[in-house]
Length: 323
Image 1 (tube, helix red, strand yellow):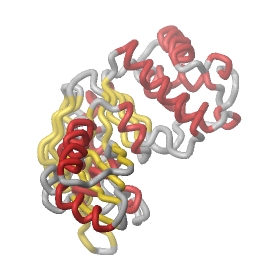
Image 2 (tube, one colour; image 1 turned 30 degrees about the vertical axis):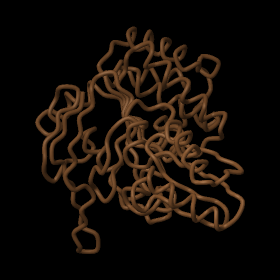
Image 3 (cartoon, one colour; image 1 turned 180 degrees about the vertical axis):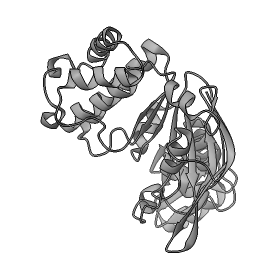
């Protein structure tokens, strides 16, 4: 559905050349839900704007839904839906009329546009709001309307740029319910950006992490967490002397630099804690060290980014946004 090679985009800011995207290679298969993650200014939105033909690339090539983004931008736009960070509906027309107008813009007859408007009203549970004006809707309702506008023409591929940002937890969960439902019913391919790492972790089949305009990781969340971050084991012993001995034993189970001891707590990072912990506890017992407590923790996508860059995504989000 997406095939990109060497996409770059440069801007001039105060007469200086800024490389927002520095050679993106990206493959997205049909029917997948892919999360595109990175800190502010990493190049996420710039990449989406290029893939959706809103911004021409400086160099590189890409085909989206079978059409070249430079040679056939109209063909790309006819086959994709795009929901940006800002609301897409106007303020002066009713919800149903907005949807009909969107269908007409895609070349549907008035009857076809009306039929499709009724379908997406039901799909996104907007029918009770059909006669309301967008300006009277809540944030979650407006985002559902934005997604409905992006689906009117039945696109094969839907781009969602921060679809749940600024919403309360209930509205965010509601938006995700509808995203998953449309995938189940239509098999729509979805590429989204989000700052909510727990959403990407639990919902996306694949995660692509971008930093400084380059892809630095790409895979399932489980593989990225296992390969790049690893599980954490924390064992508490009775005194500092035992902690030193427990740390020495831990070196057999963890990679160099992945063991630390502080007070009576020993921490180590391993590929699979469920397999390593029983063996580690047996090794401690054989060494004459009695564990008072033990716990394990799965890594997060923030841990993956920390392992790759030395900083967390949340720390990086405080930086000024350039893309």
